[in-house]
Length: 131
Image 1 (cartoon, helix red, strand yellow):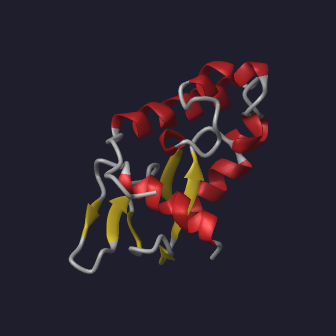
Image 2: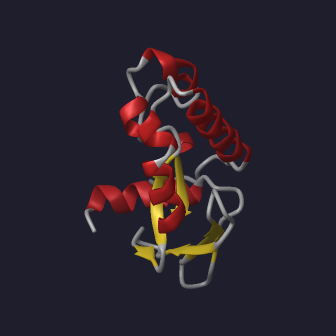
């Protein structure tokens, strides 16, 4: 796994109020979508079925229809507020559904807005040195 992806995983779990860190440094949290228990190694390596979720799809940045959503994450795809840990199944399903339909689709926009609200509800400031 690339170093940048591991760094983004670490940011996602370090800023997730539901994530806990075990004695070995492994993070445990829940899928943003279905609440399946997921783990991320201390170095940011995805364990089991963990995947990195960009809550507001990366392709939506720069699109007028998504401006209100992207503004909530500082218009930065990789802002920690836009990152979450999701199970692979949920992340792939989102990629085939709401992500693919785009922000101009009212239902897709509503789904992403609800997920972003859930992510922001789980927000905590990252500890020093977590990035």
